[in-house]
Length: 348
Image (cartoon, rainbow, N blue to C red; front, side):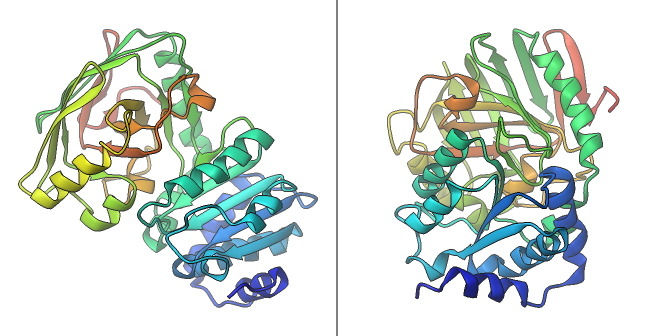
């Protein structure tokens, strides 16, 4: 079924939604994206996320912005093989875009096609993959100006550093040698034309020069595996990294172990550390089993695969990208400790 845009807009405009979603939606529109009445907005959602999209549409209508909304299932079967052309064309004439959907296996290609347009046109883009009610009521209610302040302080420190070490009581012991040729990116929830960002925001990241050590993943793993396995605290996944490549992965949950290993061996760089990041959303209290929010939880997370080279400057590529998150980190930037048991030692 391919609904006319006006019908899709009307569908979301008239959809009843939980008023508890309003504060998070208002934060997204007015604080994070700073949308203006004269700007055009592209909204991409799916059947499972329409209620949240409707809360965002209400804020846009109160603001007076022009928008076009798309429900993915109205355009193509899922999982998507490619970004629908209608959406691609609409992005070409928009200043702002919002992507609020639930991830499905093998859809990363279509999302990369979307962000390629976003990057080229410098669209202020909010990436809200797997957004749900809990995240709207927690992470999306953060004081993003406060999160931005601590993110800026962390960014200033790591940009001068050559080595970061991260440890946890669970057994993580990881070192990241930093390459000055690669840029650190701040995505604090305040989204600019220079870099699209996830919402809720709160991290600084780069492509590392080289990562070595052990990471005990007692938080979550990303992409579609997150919805499948959730919070890993009962059965952590322990991985080992040597010369920036994944060398081992072990868990009592053999299905998790097998799925993760297959995912990270999709192409020649799927097992390569493409991202090293520090979560900075200090208003998050714990991991909840949702990667969109959990990668912003204060601590270290890394990702295997695509290094987002358009932003970091990395020259290599992968068709995959999967984050891994732990809990309660101690972090040293060069010789200065900036986090102890998951709490920053620097003030926002």
